[in-house]
Image 1 (cartoon, rainbow, N blue to C red):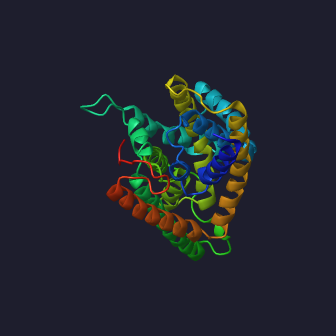
Image 2 (image 1 turned 180 degrees about the horizontal axis):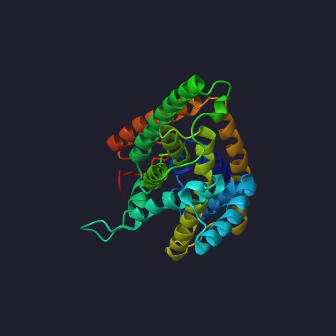
Image 3 (image 1 turned 90 degrees about the vertical axis):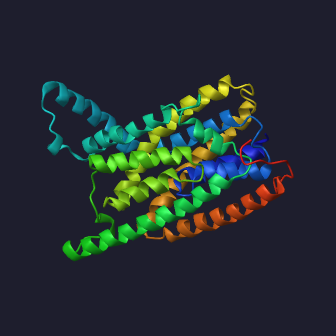
Amino acid sequence: MTILDAIIQGIVQGLTEFLPVSSSGHLAITQHITGVADEGNLFFNVMLHVGTLVAVVAFYHKLVWNLIKEFFKMLGDIFTGKFKWREMNYERNMIVMLFIALLPLFIMFIPIPGTDMKVKDLADIFAGSQILLVTAVSLLLTSLLLTVGAHFNRKNSAVSFKHMKGRTADSKGRETYTVLDAVCVGLMQVAAALLPGLSRSGSTLAVGEMRGVNKQKALDFTFILGIPSILAAAVLEGADAIKSPEGITAEPLVIVVGVLVSAVVGYFSILLFKWFLKTDKMIVFIIYTALVGAALLVVSVMEIMNGTNLFTGQTAALFA
């Protein structure tokens, strides 16, 4: 892998990790087109995720710091009997709901009956396919979820305008999560982890909008939830990458360049996403994921019929 490859994949990762278009799906597409999907990229991909982790922590550093401080205050209240569920402030509610939303991730470690695999291994099977049929369908599903989420957001705003005259569009919907909200978001995050092409940020945002949560607060929750999720994935996949036969194949300079590019691009992607959401221009992502998904679906069908990668000419099978 060259530095140019690292820059390209860093840009792709930084843009797609936070924009609702699926980073795993776009990395799979990029690697499919360039023909580097089978060159021991696992550790490099993990480091690209570390770059985007740096981006989200940097963007939300004030909120992250407030959550850390509130967490220790909450522990003190729990041990002294002063904790009251109904009296939680915004930060305390977010902390509790983040823990609840993370619980469904344990589904990933459930053994699949009749095999020696766990649920999480399905992600490797789908991502490792030489023909990106699952990615194509998942991108179309992302478009559908964004469409439904936008519909519910407009519906919630219409109700809010009716009953809360004088408030701005950004103030519509609940600002805090309920237990059911958190569970729904957590389950959607599991689905996004398994299906390359299903955007984690887009799908969990859509769930929040469907549940009547303020769209900006739903997006903030999604990004903060991504911190432990990305960190856990980086640790687990990093360990697998180091233990794999290929090990670490990328040069140190290539890895550093990739991380820096994904971090910088990721930071500005968060800014961009929040602007699109605030100005109600999510139709851009709805159309984009639908078009890419449809195009990839056509390519996948052609590759299944021909048995070859249309871009590289290499032999391709649905599940290698």
